[in-house]
Amino acid sequence: MASGDPYDAALDLLRRLNPKHVAEHVDNIITLVPELAEDLLSSVDQPLTLRRCKQTGRDYLLCDYNRDGDSYRSPWSNQFDPPLDEAGLGGVGAGGNSAGAGGGAVPSERVRKMEMKLNEAFDVYRELYFEGGVSSVYMWNLDDGFAGVVLLKKASGPNDGSSSGVWDSIHVFEASERGRTSNYRLTSTVLLSLATKGASLGEVDLSGNMTRQVEYDLPVENDESHIVNVGRMVEDMELSMRNLLQEVYFGKAKDVVGDLRSIGSLSEGQRDRDAQRELIGSMRR
Amino acid sequence: MSTPKAIVSSFVEKAPPGEACLRSYHIKTLTASRPNLVNELGPAFKKYNEEQFRTVLLPGSSQHVILSSYNSLGDGRYYDVESSSSFAFDHTTQKPSAVQSHVLESAQADLIKSTLKGLSAYVKEHFANGAYGAYPIENDSKVAIIIVANKYSPSNFWNGRWRSLYIFDPSSNSLDGSIKVDVHYYEDGNVRLLTNKAVSASLSSVTGAGIAKDIATGEKKYQEELNRSFTSLSEGAFKALRRQLPVTRQKIEWDKVAGYRLGQDIGGGGAARR
Image (cartoon, rainbow over all chains, first blue to last red; front, top):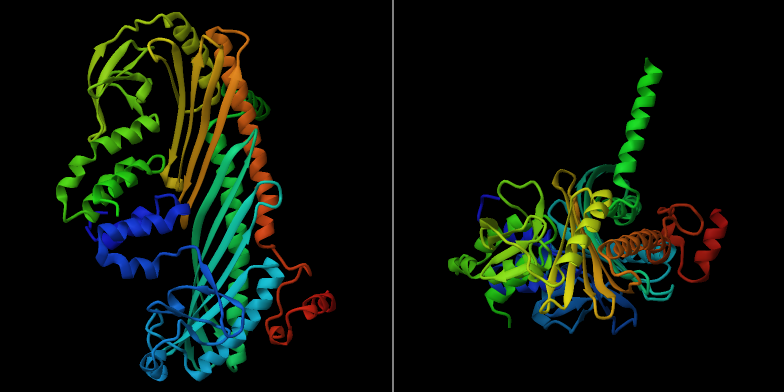
């Protein structure tokens, strides 16, 4: 913490402030240090917003990877909304080679084909696991391969009594192609916000985000292999993150409350432990 | 548009439990163009400390005393009834000083002392790191009762705070207040539990022991209710967001997924794979 880098300080601060209001905190930090705007907006995961594709009528998710200025690219139609100038769309090849974020990047024909297949595959995945919600996959070219982001969002309203929740997952992957194998690096963040209230409970809010990274070298025969590899990687990651979130949100939080306040009497608990120790001691003797 | 001072003050006031010491580093780094801003944050630190019932260890004492607006004497001084002392607190350096003897003079003094006695037994039995206080407020017409417990475990990436505030009104025998729990977990992420439960009770026995007993019963009930809410959130809202596995109990066959079509084929495909 000795270094005075404002970007590190901003991220460190964001790791401490209430994650439920991350967007507001980011705005506030940008007001303090406007130079941080681009870095923070592209690196700090925030709850996803959605838009309806004008060409296909389907919803898609917005993020920095499908943004160009104020326009966003629909994965279903490959069109920007609002449309970009002709000049902006001209550089498909050159723009497609940029490292992703913004820039009106449209992937090359080959990568766009994978993008379409992954969108179709994750639409099925979304229905099977989320039974609702919205999914979007965006891809871009890299010098030695390609990269992409799989986005999933689901909100559950206050329908089971008075509880509500929002799940946002953001899986960013990079694939370096090395002949018959590919090296995949996956960074996944899940933002999960849950709230409930009741007369005898009052209000409870459990909100946050967790991030995990994995790296794999996997065999590749053709572009179909990439769909399978990316799909499995994201599916396994979400399963382990869901388990992690369950443990932290419900197990850990409850344990900490129990560490703050003991439902049972502390002295009785101590007496029980002493008695047990004595018993074990006498059995050893 | 918020001013830098208002923004930084809001960061100070929104600090999670156990992290107050990190604030000035962030503030200095993020307001490098206004190095003096850190000196203007006294009011924000004061607000945070008083709202969060910051506990302080006075020199030569082993018992934590509480900071709140209810035991403020003004001019940065606070008092504690049990230890019959008052002290100055510098909200910027977070240090107490100038401890003096302070004898409670209040028409409610007997009730306050017997309440503290009852609270002492209760807090010792249920809070590993608890502090408590009772103070006359509103011209001696009411009594403010505070319980606060902090547990910081930075090596395990979590910190937590339990705080309760009750206002006892002897004219109506009513006990009104709130219980708040704040838990921060930050390994590989940032997760926060924030709860708020309003409490309102009418007491039959207006003794210190009766007040402490009513608080103990209410807090036990609340904690049990909160524990049940973790289970119901896990089984309810959480499950409704994302299943652990598809209905078929099987992971997706990604080599065939391009063949799945949305709509009726999902059910059909799922049945076929079972």
